[in-house]
Amino acid sequence: MALGRGFGVLWSANALSNLSDGLAFVSMPLLAASMTEDPRLVAGLATLYALVRLFVALPIGVWVDRFDRRTLIVAANLLRGVALVGLALSIQFGPSSLVVLYATMAVVATLESLADNAAVAILPSLVKREQLDSANGRVAAVQLVADEFAGPPLGGFLFALAAAAPVFAMGGLWAVAGLVALALPIRGSSRAPVEAPAVRRSVYTDAAEGIVWLARHHVVGGLALIGALASVGYMLAFSILVLFAQERLGLTGTGYGLLLAFSALGGLLGSVLASRLRRCLGYRWTIVTSLLLGALTLGGLALTTNAILAGVLLALYILHAVVWNICSVSLRQRLVPDHLLGRVGGAARVLGLLGLALGSALGGILGTIHLAIPVAVGATVFVFCGLIAAVTLRDELLS
Image 1 (tube, rainbow, N blue to C red):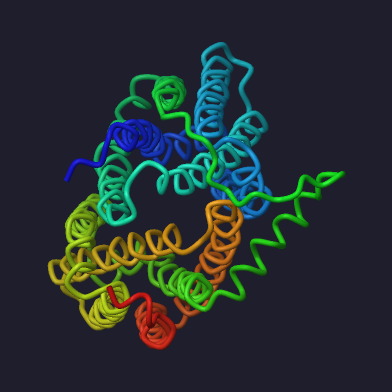
Image 2: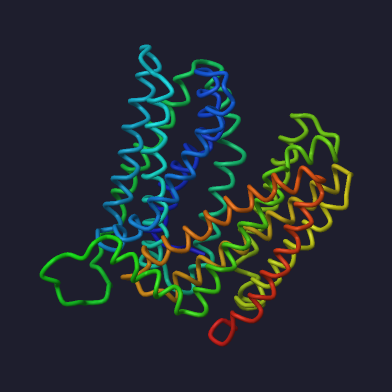
């Protein structure tokens, strides 16, 4: 199905940006480890990244609704490119430090949140309403390929050549993504006309409008609640998955990497199937079925010690996660007014990030008792998610 030139431009910019994300997944921790042997400081890079994304989610939602989304996508990618090239130069010529690395990653986290929110919000203006599922599926597919298959090994290879090499590559990819995004069509805003206020409202007053809308809409609010709970269930299992793979499945580090790579294949299949399942089952039952598949696969994973079976179960789990994400994002794009897409998306992102943090903490605590327990509890969480979806997603979502 042809989705048009505008979507092709957005897809291309996302592909370049996601490849840079995949490089960062491997190269940034390696870079931190080359600067310090303190595991707290190495792990702190990921913690900082998550905290920054949490704190900026609401104001970024406001900016996405206030300003031209094409301009935001271009600026966010170009500025990320500049920041990474600056970091690479500091590494190459000696003055780099953990402080510089941490500061750069804080900037990148902020700009990534901006680019992601703006890309989701601009998509409904680039494709027809009935094409949203297919468009989001193609975005998910390229993200999986770049983040899971292409980026990490390329990042490790470039780091082995020189510490600055993957950082230069990341900066270049983000800069090119920004230049590609310049080709996005310039469109008039379809946002709701309002009386121009004498004084612009504060960012958090505008953000509150998105939060209130989300809380009052039973479908989109229900999706946000399910997303938060699903994030808890996901992190319950995946926060201790490396230990589970070592101690329960008997895998080495290489085996663990292969396990994750194989599981990502399920996500690729999910990106292809999502729109077809939605046409056959409707949004409601596609979402319910996918969430229950998540519960079934985590339940099976908690019981198995066979690495091959675990790989199949994880692939099916990632399939469910991609189908759920495509359907939930497409529904939000369909149901939220254009002038609120950024703010509602920001509020939903806050709930999801809080769910990830809670699930990670609970997974670590429960894992000290037995490594199968957080996986089994995660399965239970997904059962509740499926029940909430069956009750909440009704009426207009049957097709």
